[in-house]
Image (cartoon, rainbow, N blue to C red; front, side, top):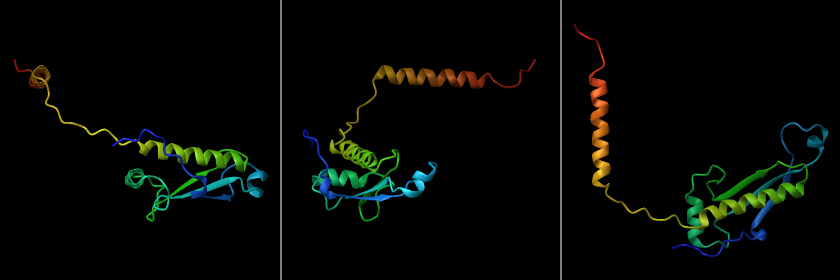
Length: 136
């Protein structure tokens, strides 16, 4: 099952809090809360169940045990830009799992590819067999 429509993240389902940014930046970093923590509760979201399941199945360390996706944005100096950056990154994550992966169907290798593999193995075997001490 694949989705043709894009799953949009509802901003009302996102909890955003301002925090102080880390790292170099002088006095601005020390006094201004320009970084943003974004929390997105996957279970409580309005996304389709299939998207929720795929999102929870990803091995992402930003998803907590309770199923909350936590993103931290501190790239920019302004809180508004960090907020927009966090929302954009959240949308990219949701877009990444919104389309179901195609099911892989097992196929048999062709006879020619099997032949090439066996020839390569025998060539490698010959190379290894001729190594070693030369006896006169």
